Length: 192
Image (tube, rainbow, N blue to C red; front, side, top):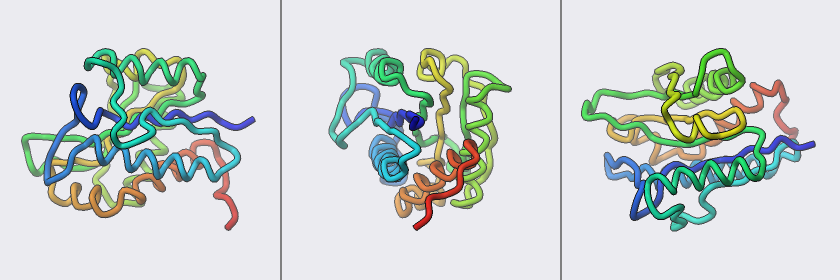
């Protein structure tokens, strides 16, 4: 049976629950594109079933910050997904802050180990700085999902080098997340 992966493309394109902005980029645009590329990769692999939170770049979820987050979690829980990946970009008032991190609810869990695989794949593939694993039990999408869940901070939208990578190679980030999933499940890449 195929493994069901729910991809949450963090934030809404407009209205409420919009994301960070920096370096001429909007987080919600980057997360949409990376999520769409990742969904395509998983779609081509018969070992996975995939759904996304935003089908189009203009999809707005919920009618407030809270209901936007609730909608994403409800979509994954009601499917039900086997794993939940929430894609984000980090931001800081310090332009020097950079790198990739993965956030999970608790240590020594399937979420944590999956996060480690994804983090390692992004860092080794994209050359971003390894900011490590973060425990974030307060995050709604990690607290309320009923399956292993990882929130991935791809890179800093407010850092010039990171933002250039996000702008020029969103496919690279998606391919790295896919590679991290294959590594976690100990699966070989599909033969061409």
